[in-house]
Image (cartoon, rainbow, N blue to C red; front, side, top):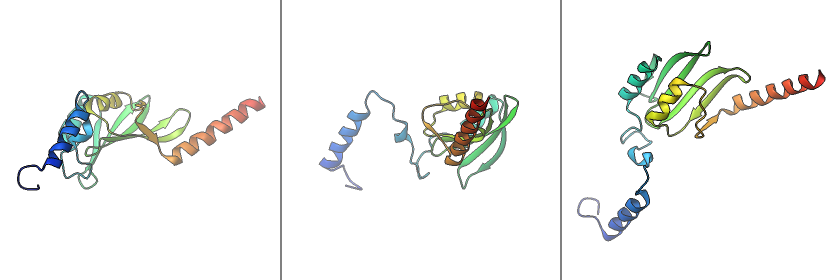
Length: 151
């Protein structure tokens, strides 16, 4: 029941959840994506880590729940946006072959965030590129291949 002791059905589902989660760490249980529960990443911890890794704080939007940093990487300025309630991290950078790109990684933990702050081009396997950037990259690769074929 909502206010009293758990019903038999609630107890059963609680046992099932404990059994399915045993032996594995499930970060999704620590956060409510709507922002009403605990955030996936602590804003204070994100800011401390960014400062430690040489990133400059650009802006914080509590309404959008995003904090943005700038870092010089490979001779270029990179923007790193951290959505602390969802654990999504976006990097905006000038890729050597693809041009300006945006890469997003979902469900990022603090360890992976540290790696992204150190190497904003890091591919984590949990990311995606915006369609616009992917189309632009594909068109650029095709043009380069055609130019190479003509030589």
